[in-house]
Length: 410
Image (cartoon, rainbow, N blue to C red; front, side):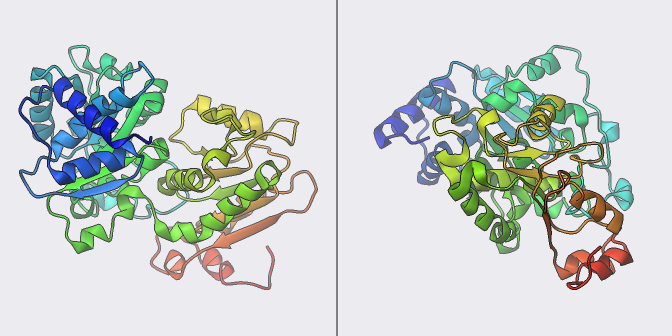
């Protein structure tokens, strides 16, 4: 969203009034972060303790309201680590008349240090499901009902509430959230590194937020991010290493549009949303066909297909892909193994794997999506040495031997 400087400052004043921040004056970095977010950019905010990190995301729903032509309530999702911090913020917000709630996960299903000995260490595999299916806490009041209907302007949530909880993920993929979420915030972002490796593994999977909200700007806030943490920012936003593969595809699609050969790109769930946003950034208004069909998902030239989507989303994509006409709009699909057995897409011309499957049988099945109409097709596999290392969990010896092979076909 592009707004004039004058309009931006009027929007800030409006948001401060709505939040009842009487006598509050924003600091330079707060202005800069809000300006970047309203422009649709991702931001890492490294701000000292006491600088006022929370006020940034508390203003966002109302800043968007000022600039929005929609009457629908804008929602900001805040991923935060501790109940005490969340409840303190919710109490303060409600005192000022701002609707805020928390998607609560049952404590007995939260991962503990002892649980982690069985956690999936291969977070980069092209799979969909997370190991633990947490349950949402059924509150005595109507908070969960209000959350489902999207009534809260600020929704606080733990990573376990949507990464390893199907019910929580279903809420975030429902219509009120897919239409109205204007920003995803990761508060205390340094914990992605500190907690994500051992204590609470779902913190290391926060980039799945991008798969759920591919076009929504993300804000990571912290007071203590040193260089080691900043270098790990792809854990939240996405991976620049994938861009070397995806950018040429996006640029060719921008040129050929509807004539681009139908392609399935297999990649890990946590990078699907990043790939989608990258294509949006490169193709811009040409993301939709014909020209002028902006914001109609059925006209978009590329799509995601993974378990984090609702059944309705997946069925609409499959309806296009499996239809009799070869002129369906979708030309590139970012997929995990969810686009699996029993799906017959007749005219796939190309299958690209960004990262190898664990078994040769899986690879054989997945490249078998191409060329089902009897015409020629091709398969491309990208991999790194670390992905086929002997210490890679689940990677079979057959796949390790096959990946470096350049002269032998399956």
